[in-house]
Image (cartoon, rainbow, N blue to C red):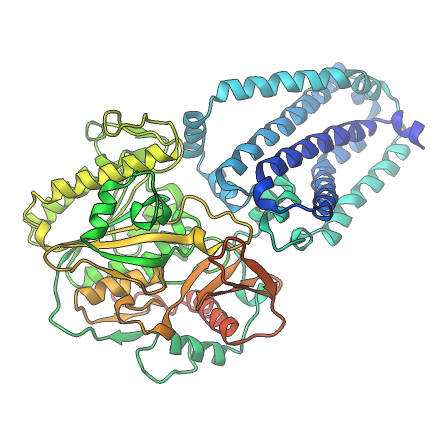
Length: 639
C-alpha cells in the first residue's frame, strides 16, 4: 500500500503534510520558548501540548486538503501530464510552502504582540487592509522578512523537487484516485465531528492552552465565532430571575421587577450644570504605565501631576481587550456581550441609548473626534448613528496634520482639532461633549520628532512618554482658552497594552486609569471604589447634577455602596464579574469557573459545578445585556 501511495499523484499530499507538520512543530517549539516563564510547564504539560497540538495541526490540514483532493481526483490523465498542469502544480506547492513559512513568521510576531495564537483580533484586522498593512510595513523590516521567507521556501522546495517530479509523472486510473480521495475526504469529516475548541482547554493556565492550538485553525474558529448567542452557548437563569437580579443591581433602592426593561429616570440632586466635557480615551494606556500606580520609569510626568490635581479613580477596569469594547462601554454603558462588540454589529449598532444622545438632548454639541480614519472598526457609522458628529483623519486638512502613521494623525494634531472644535462651540454659545480617541500609543510607536527624549519608533515606552507629553501640551493650550474653566477633562484608556496572562481573564491586565480634571469644579481626591468603564457615563452625568432617562447598566461610582462594587471584564468568549476579591467567569458550553484572589501573582481558576450568588450576579448582567440588546430595549426613544 505504501509503495502504491508513493506511485500516486496523492503522494504530493503526504509530502506537503510532513513539511507542514515540521513547520507547525517549529512554530509551537519557538512559542514554548517565548512563553516558558509564564506557562508553568511540567513534563505532563509538555506531552499534552504537543499531543493536542498535533491533533489540531492534522485537523487544520484535513480541511485545507479538501480542494487539493478534489483537484487531484478530477483532473484527467491527458491534462495531468501537460506542461501547463505541471507548472501549475509546482507553483501551487511553492506557494503552499511559502505560505507555511509566512504563517510561522506571522504567528511569532502576533504572539510577541498579543501572547496568543491567531484569534478574533487577526480576523478583525484582516478586514482593514490599509491600516494593517501600513502598520506592518512601518513596524517591521518587511522586505527582509519576506526575502528570508522566500529563500527558506526555495531551499525546502529544492529538497522536495525529486518527489514532486515523480508524482507528476505518475499515471493513475480514476478508480484508484477515487479510492484515495474517498479516504482523504473522510479526514475533514472526522475533524468536524471530533475536534473542537474544547480540546485545547487542557489547563487553567491560558498559555498552555494557546500553545496546544494551531494558529490557522484558531483563525478559522475565530472567524466562525465572531458572534455568539448567549442563550445558546452560556449558562442561563430563568429570565424572570435574571431580570430581577439585574434590576436589583442597577436600581437605586427601587423594588426589583421581573422584567429586563431597565429604562428608568435618574434624579441627580442639585442644580443642573452644563459644563463642557473633553473626554480623552487613550489607546492602550495601562494603569501600570503611570508613576501614580507605581511605575518607576518616569514615563508619565504630566499624567502623574494631573492625577494629583484630579478626581482619580484607582480601581477602575476596562471591560475588554479591544478599542471597540472601550468605546462601547463608555458610550452605551453596557457589559461586553459575547462575540464582536456592538460597535461592529452592522445593522444593529445605531439608535441606541448613548451618552451622546443624552447630552445632545440637553443641548450639547456632541462630537466623536478620532485620530484615524473613522471607517476603521465601523466607528463612524456607530457614533453617527448614536448622536455624535464626526471629526477624523479623513475630514482633517492635510496641512493641519504634521505627522501621520499607519493608524492616523499624531496625538497633538488630534488635540489641535479638538481645541479648534471647542472654540467653534464656545463661539456658538453651546456646551460641548467631545469624545476623543487617540492612536499613537500603538505599534509602530512612531510620533513627531523633538517632542520627547526617546527616539520615535523605538518601542512602547517612547509612545507612552509621547502620549503623556501630548496630554500635558493639550492641557497647557486649553488653559489659555475662555472655555477651560467650565470644562471637565476626562482621561481614560480604551484598554490596557496587553491582556494575556496565566489565566483567561487576568484581572490586573484590565486595570486602567480614569481621572477627571477641572480645578474650578472637581476637588482633587482619590476614589477607591471598584468599578468599570460602564460606570463612566452615569458618573459624569451625576457630576453635572443632570436628571435624565436612562437605559444604562452602569451606576454613579461616587454613590456606590460597598456591596454594589463590581467590575465587568471579558474577552470575546469569557465573561467575568469581579467583586469582593473573586472573579466569576462564564464560558461557552455553559462552563462556569471562578478565581479567588485574582490579583495574586499566580491566580488559580477552578471549575464551578452549581451556581452561587456570585455566578448568578454574573449571569444576570450578561444574560440581561444580551436580551436587552437583541430585543432593542436600549433603543433611543427620542428622535
